[in-house]
Image 1 (tube, rainbow, N blue to C red):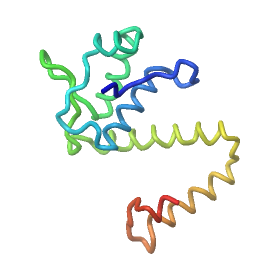
Image 2 (image 1 turned 90 degrees about the vertical axis):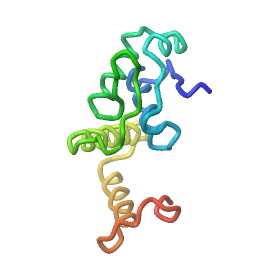
Image 3 (image 1 turned 45 degrees about the horizontal axis):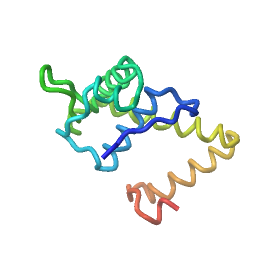
Image 4 (image 1 turned 30 degrees about the vertical axis):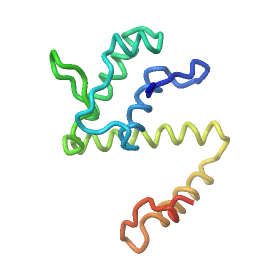
Length: 139
């Protein structure tokens, strides 16, 4: 299974594309705590990019607390409980930044974004209670 791919035409830097794919794989349950990631050299060879690009993506993911490097063993998905408050905030901030970049590419203005955000928050947090992202809240 080839989990990672790159879009060389994308304005998003390659290392960020890789970071986002790892985050999505973790969030979607494709990668779970304890799963081993490909080595830097192996993934660089497979994606035909400089190993420093892969190393940078891995370093950022490790800084966020999503993966951990075990000397002599490799790189693994970290336990979810290991995420510190600052790592959780950074992870959400990164996701919001990506969402905002996409909104800008689509030509949405600030008022439209405010309206969409207010609508989504109301759908997800009804009457102060967290409902979660069920099917109704996602549409």
